[in-house]
Image (cartoon, rainbow, N blue to C red; front, side, top):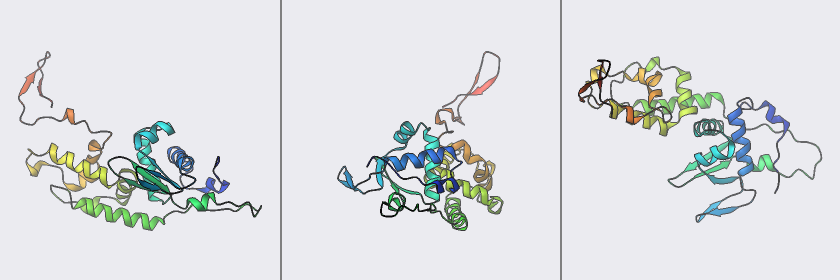
Length: 227
């Protein structure tokens, strides 16, 4: 099949004005199998395709970070599902048949609304994820009520559980030799500190070695040796 169907109703789609999400969704529609296939012994049904974040970035012209965020948007509102293993990701366009059904028997255009999750459902899922992540915080678990609903939703829709767990592990490793009473409480980490430990922001090579000796630079300033 050499084309895909895109109806004008997409102009009312909540992600239409989000350039990156719109680009990625249309790209996924174009990449999806129009008939059943297979890859490495696994069945790849119509409406699905095998890819990876770097490959999607190269093909769409987005960065890996932009692809990851856009994909989270599409997963959150139910446009796609994504299964990932250590070799590849399998992306499935939900309701592919709904979008691409053959309407040649009826010349009257059919207006379809792209399915989406109810906002209350999204917030409830964000709350569930937040509680799960909160239990994993390794230090003082205080100030839970000060983490806003918008922050919880951002963690759910833009960051995702796997990346946030990596943030927690990096933070735990970074603070391993610190006195726990001087480490930020959980609410501070969830509201702001986690951002320093995101995949695109974290630089392990710049972590300060707490027990490293001080060196004196050419200007007479003392600095700790960096890892």
